[in-house]
Amino acid sequence: MFEPLDDPLPPEFDAAFRRRVVRRAHQQRRRRLAGGAAAAAVTVIAGAAGVYGPSVWRARDIDRVQVAGTEPVATGEPVTFLLLGADAPRDDGVSGVRVDTILLARLDPSAASLSLLSLPRDLLVTDPAGTPVRINSLAGDLETLVGVVEHQIGVPVDHVAEVDFRGFAALVDRIGGVDVRVDQATRDASTGLYLDELGCVSLDGDTALALVRSRKLELLRDDGTWQRDAHADLRRIETQRVVVTAALVGLDRLGWTPGELRDQVEWAVDHLTIDDGLSLDDLVRLGRAAAALDVADVTSATLPVVPSPLDQNRLAQDPSRAPAAVAAFVAGEPIPASTPPGVAPPPPVTGAETVVAPC
Image (cartoon, rainbow, N blue to C red):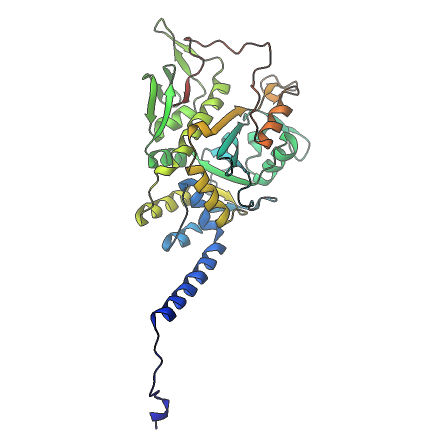
């Protein structure tokens, strides 16, 4: 009774038919992956395209925060990130998020250039209630912080990325260290920093973290004594940009074997927070552009500031210089020097103008 169900001439599936089926399956898979924007955050850190297999599903656990106004940027157009360095991950149960580093990064893929603009953590801004507060005190609400940066500093923000300190140290180790030029022997007992080798050196994760967190910097004088750097706080901001630049240009050293990729995803899950407006396509393009940068492609500056009239221990935007610096950053143009014309910069302790600089 089952004979009519048997096809005496079964169809033959040639090679062309099989290729069409496989191609259609791949296209459907790619569309599904494109919808998983959470997985794309790995490409920002790794600086390379492509997440697949189990790593895609694991990447969905990366911490994401809803921030109004963040959205993908058109291919080839400049994109501005608000980069934050926090003392701990947002989801580790710590009460309050303390941010030590606030950095604006403008990446222009078409021009192969990156501009960095530091915002001092002691900069006074106005919170939604109209109260003057330090800008880093707003880090608990990323949407409010982005609004302040856009409306009070004047820099439109496309995306937000936050890395905790241990994650930063781990990333530096993953790329094999960061290369910086040490111009003055320096130490800081509070962070465990001690650098006595001058010239271009490679810093591991713990040393790089101790350097960017240093607030009680001491410099070795020519007579062999150590002297506290009176400008340690602003010097720390400059140092942070040097180390971040070295880390960004070192992203191309990350490997892409399945095991290495899995480790990168695990790093992002443990240490990274991003806005939920990041798209897969956007991040792939930006990751590739960041990995292709050299130190010479990066320019950086600190937002020009003066002592705040409300509190001499806090900072305010310099009304005579900050607008020009912000306008240049937004336009992707060279940022004017922070030192006003006719005013000499603070004298170095040992004859060197910088503590660390790009190699």
